[in-house]
Length: 210
Image (tube, rainbow, N blue to C red):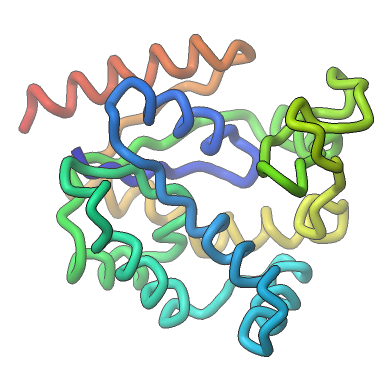
């Protein structure tokens, strides 16, 4: 099953995707992870991406599509995948249709106040990429032993820009996929397992419709 995971920054898409991977036995493909890996490469191309991400802006569609197309061609995607972080605009959704036939779009619906609270305390492991909240996780290092830090795009000034960008460019995708008949809304809950159960129910419904 080929799934697009849609939601505001900090809504919990990465956490949900991780649980869906184990359940569905398909990979999650995070364009954010692909971009961050490139940004950390130290190349001129990577440095340009790093600067754009740090400011809360969007990396060009052409750049993302190039990396995504290569990733979708790998062997572990033959039974499907979960796209997290792409598409972010209707234009990107239209271009995605040239390289992928999406079965369902899961829209993770979480109140903005809840998201802002999450992002304001979010810390990330430099080694494994695991995300914690500093309000509940009091250790100074990750469980893997890696250093914890605040990503540039999780700093207050970047958060504000990310929300503005989401409202303007990404939120219209809700109606776009709704009009295509493949949108499934998943209510985000305080307990990630409750969110996961809601997502599984939504996917079961999508499979029956197909």
